[in-house]
Amino acid sequence: MDRNPSPPSSEAEEEGGDAVGNTVYSKHWLFSILTRLIEVISPEKAEPAVSPEGGQTELDEEMENDICKVWDMSMDEDVALFLQEFNAPDIFMGVFAKSKCPRLTEICVGILGNMACFQDICMSISKDENLGQVLLQRLCDSDSPTLLETSRLLLTCLSQPEVANVWVERIRENPSVYDCVCFIMSSSTNVELLVKVGEVVDKLFDLDEELMLSWIKNGTCRSVGPSVDDSPEELPDFKIVPCILEAAKQVRSDNPEGLDVYMHILQLLTTVDEGIEAIVQAPDGGKETWSLLYDLVCHELCQPDDPPVIVQEQKTVLASILSVLSAMFASQTEQEYTKMRKNMPLIGSLIRVLQYMEGCGKRSVDNSKEAEQQETGRTDLNEKDFHLKILKDICCELLSNMLQELTKENTLEGLHQGHLNEQTCSSAFQNLLPLYFASVESFLEVLREADQTLADNLEKRFPSLKVHA
Image (tube, rainbow, N blue to C red; front, side, top):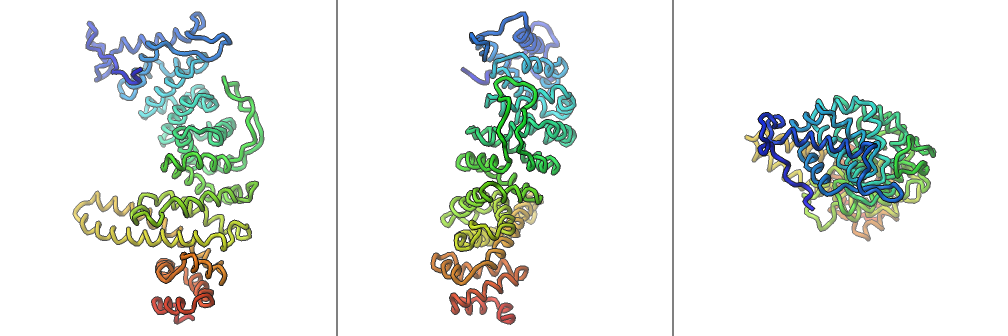
């Protein structure tokens, strides 16, 4: 079946003035579809395809085709304003309350999502408290397509500065949202849904630290709130960190952008003490988080067989991951998983990231010369350099802390495994000095015990170290 047929035109209408705004779409046709929607959910008319148990129903093909046309048409502002004028949101509320057809619910939420892309309509939808509550209840739906469209609608509203706070406050006052979001993150295998829900959580945490703190502290079993069809009456004792990790594992292979989103959520958690505690005081003491991030850095991102320019593509996800690892390392030096004997490959990976950034830096200088007469080009370049600088700062901080923890045995192992040699150590020193002089000096003392010749060579390359020796 054609999912997106061509919307009807007003050209077939005999009467003039039937066009919606400046479009060729027919007002009469649109109004007829809204009328049919009302009939579908009216008590006096039985719904089509009702199961013997009175459960889920299906739309007939003609109705589904027509309502899908409206969904496509609603991306046009004139059509969206027409739907708003004729109280389509109220009609959709009736659908949510009375219909047991998941497909119909999905389409109606999707139409609202398109309408919310326009600021005035978004403000109207957002300020309708009843509609807002009903939409949040859709997060407890068992239908993945409906959940996806609901998440898309919420993200659209949260991205509008004029109404974002309205939704933040509404979500803060609805504990069921936390439960339902955690349930999706911990149990769904739908990558597209997980990415969109992750974007909603990321936006919420970025907008409101108080909400993030309350979600970090959550975990008690509670009722989901008003009864919602096909949703559990009570959900498990969710903790935010394990749910984020489970979602990240699901999206890591199929969706790099989704992985970036969930790593940024973890990074946002580390901006408050309670978030770091939630990560490192999980039942396993943070081992699962460390293992996942370690595996990503050492075995998936910025690998030896990748071209150096890969660091440009992966700079934001790398910055998030290394930021979390740095926070964990600083707070959990006694944990077994942070012991240096298990993390020499991570030191090698950190140095490789710095080496790749050096290569990108040289390219940036060349590109900047070529773009001297192009203001837009310089702006884009500066933005790229800014993100690379953030990554470099985070990378250097973690590397310096890890180098300070190395023993002679660790260093010998690193030399044996190839993570440490004159080239990698030189690159590390080049990036760490002079800011992390004490860390470099401490490592050099240990290196002298493990390989005097290498230490001497490095001192020749970096005379400032020799003066302080």
